[in-house]
Length: 249
Image (cartoon, rainbow, N blue to C red; front, side, top):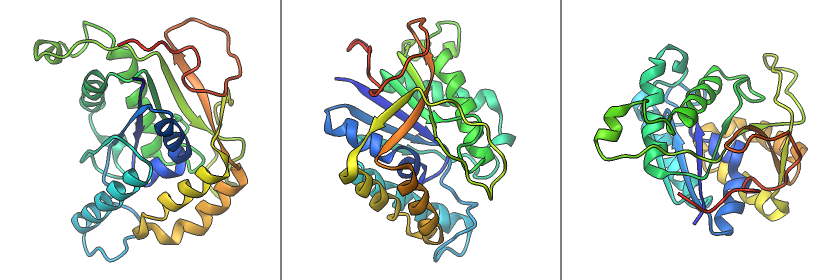
């Protein structure tokens, strides 16, 4: 069985950036996993929360409901500080993401681009950098050897993708997006389910009109940039994240 790991920074990133793709591959029998680095406790929009801890609890619940709607097999919301991923120890976070990759053993890893996606959020950029290092280092027997002594084995995922787009948001900080190499057609039905999954994050309801407008502008597909592959290759257009992937551990 193929396995897909998605790494994000905040609750709602999973639906906003990857919802259609996660739904599509789950429907094809792919085992989908989500790793969210923060519970989003520093968000501007706070719903009924009276403290950061209240908001973290609220958003963890929203994330769990969204993951059920997206048919995600397993999800984990870690406890790194929202709006401060650029100030935590790089090596420590990479070690933990590496551990998850070695545990889940995904064939394909997807995450946000290092520019921070169309919102230019610094946490998004850091999630990309952590995941990129972990993708490479999880395969190496000389990285985080304490994990190997504990029974895990190196794991070499076959592809790493960054989510990207064919448009930017003019009212945000500037971003230089990675070129699209892969366009995954999700269709109108999954587009609507993706929007519905995002709207489960009710604490973020002021963002709903902005999100829906941008999502409908993108259309019934999600776009990615192939950032790394175990097979040296020229860049080529794809329509399937698992194109050329072998069903092996």
